[in-house]
Length: 321
Length: 249
Image 1: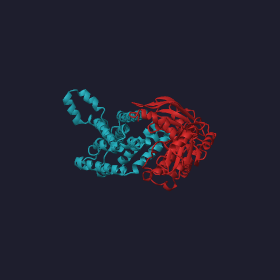
Image 2: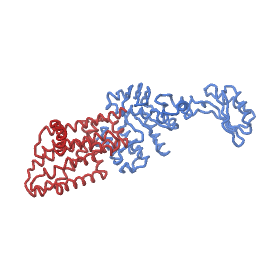
Image 3: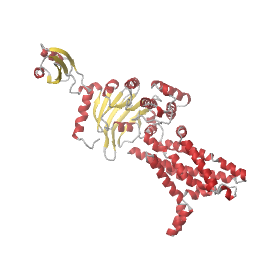
Image 4: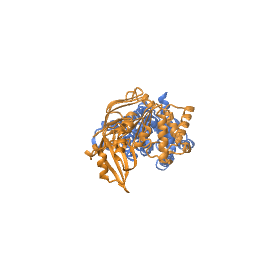
């Protein structure tokens, strides 16, 4: 549904997006990750046709966003960053206005407004002016306008920003539900969200795609993926590390922390196939130790994220956002 | 057909926007107070002893509009850009010119309403004497066109900035130039200064005053109508160019 090909955007002094390519099909929810200023919003603005790309193309449902913007925009719903809305209007008036510009009139319009009001839990504020709403409601109002015409393609820029945990949960399950029938791109800072919602994730850093895969695949890139965490009571840290480092298939072992006579140790695998070998080997090596807990770790997305985006940022601390 | 319904939706929203805040009411009240007091206090409506609105009423319009119309138009795009709703508006399946025209029409209709509400002056002059109502109608028509020209300029300056005050000042300055280059004291001064009558005359043809004057005399000349429509067209076109260049970054 969405095809982004070699997309670049440069502003006067810097390149915001640099040769980004990816596709999103119907039934996919693509998570767009990256540090602040990485080019997420700029990419989304180009996909939705708000700003023209410097280079490259975006096609939505076969329509080029520059060549045939109206047809492409018709297929898309868009929630811009910070969820802007006409604050002088009521929720109902605002949604009705958007519905009209989406080509819905009369009964169709009323039905569409009622549908999204229900979906986004806005019943209690329908007749309220938007500037009197709390941030959560305002955000959901803007979210509601993006789905008012039941679009095939949804582009959501930080859809859960500023919501409380319950609302976040609602919006996430809404996205997941809609993702079954639509092509959805959404950007976020929250990594757990990616695991909860996305079928695929892209990490973008300083305008470039640095990782692209399912959350599971990305997690596997983690240093910790397949590592075994062991909690032992009554053994000295150095002795522990020494013995664990020698375990078959272990790359190295390290102490995570020592507290109240308990030691947390992590054993990193040499290869990443998680068939339980390492765990069994560690348990065998533990022998007579008083093992309190042992489990294999999946790898953590935030660690992957930091691993990919941090070293580069450290190399160039100033001037790059 | 589609574009008309889009423009209609935008116009409707924008017009409702005026009335959902005190802006509309304050504007209309001040507009009526000013036109009334200028006519009867400064314009010497009664002293003229003529059943005419030309010298007492309509003569003030180029000056009143100078401040009031930019005040009505300053928010058109500046507000959209400040709040970020422009991103919403321009990613909807509408073209930029539909949005520009829709917004412009809303403000123009709003100004028309303010203008229509000056009708008591017309009733007064009809009660006191028997004026040429054709001339008055022509003057109103000219006044409406002039308001449109000022408004289109404000629309353009509003697109330049996200700050409404900057927009207001810029459009007042541009409109002031358009007024002054046909204002007799200013043109006389220029003629004395440079001794190039033809240049001053040429400048005067760009002035709203020159063109508006014909309407107040009851002359609806296509050249004057075309002048105002050109100013409107040019300014709205420039608005589109400015909006596009902003997005291109």
